[in-house]
Image (cartoon, rainbow, N blue to C red):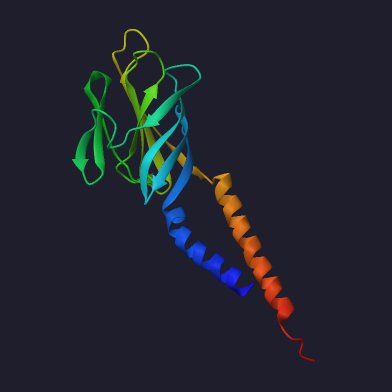
Length: 188
């Protein structure tokens, strides 16, 4: 039993750094005119990819959005993980690939209406407030470029798999503790 427990501890020590550096983080942004729900795949603190849904006053219902990273075609690398991506009307949205979101922002492409070239970014304002910003070609007639910035809140949603791993770990610790307690001699 001791060797099995030692093997489990060694295996956990080997696997845990990889598990700790890779995660899925879910977010919800809420403001008066914009709402977004998205997930990021994060490795070593960097968002490697991500996608979600965006609601806005410019179209009805939700629309798909995808994270812009340094590997996105036509992205401008500003060095140090910082990037710039151009949307309709020559609008550049600046961001980075770090998570949790910092002051440089995350940038998403939006697939709302065919041939609509619009981007969305979300950035930290400090004190738990964030700005979500939509910019690019307008889906409505008579308005060539849209700019809508809204201050709101960003909530991190814990993944169910994260909770499952934590509960499994606590159950294992409880089992080891009870096994060990049952072997202790009774002093009386």
